[in-house]
Image (cartoon, rainbow, N blue to C red; front, side, top):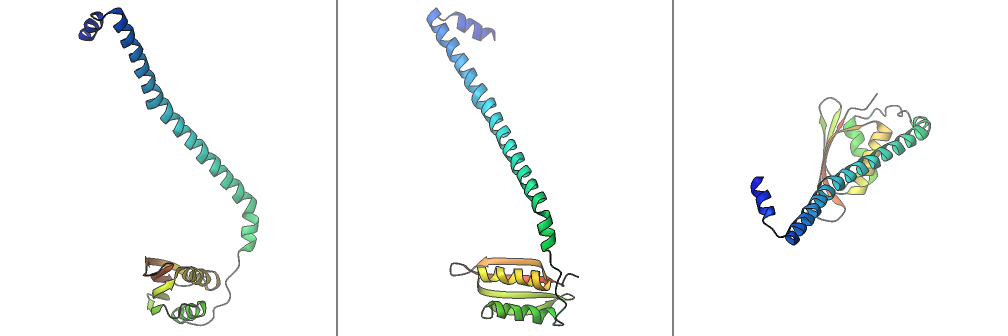
Length: 162
């Protein structure tokens, strides 16, 4: 520290003012750019997250009765084994040409292989199996196929929910 003081003392008065002003400017830049700006950004992001969560909670509270009223019980069992059910609903949805294999998996589970299936149709089929028949997806792997909007998929359904 003494070296710096002796160096500073050896400067002319004009140079000392220049160094002092430069030191103050660097100090302000470090303060603003290194502390205040990041702190302000973090606080702003936290406030935004908090507001979003409050809005989501208010929406959930306002729509809870409608959501609960809209829950539908599953239709009575069709009597079809899950393997047959999944295959039939897939063909009805328009995935007949994409179905490459439907086989039992575990007790009352089903594993399905699809190739070159239209993605939108696949999603609609999955939603139908869940909503109408209670088949839940246990695991799913979806890979991009050759064309746009077309996928290869492997889906394993678990037994119907009670």
